[in-house]
Image (cartoon, rainbow, N blue to C red; front, side):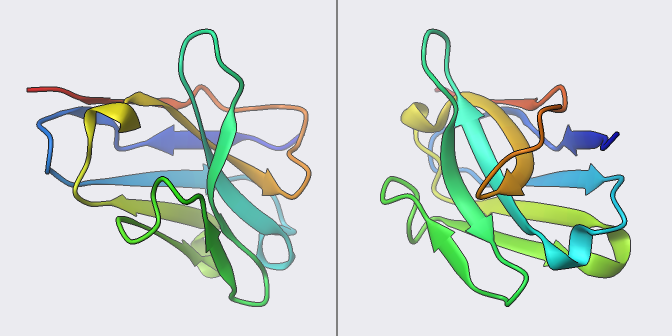
Length: 115
């Protein structure tokens, strides 16, 4: 069973930056796509950034130019650098595989952007 452990969230002011980390306990980390998802109360999780095994990355329009996804295959860790944060970025952020996420999800990390 895969374990995903997210960290790095917090309460920040608009315009601030945060860096999220996700450690994955899977030996196939280097050959799978990894993504960051986020969820707000009453809404479905949405994929905001993905990093494929070939090095390609994709971003939701809402975060393009502000968020950067990266990965360290040796550490089985994926990161999300979030700059110029906006109140609408407030959500619980999760990592998981893409395009099809594992059935098990981590606990997520709360990001709150508020003045």
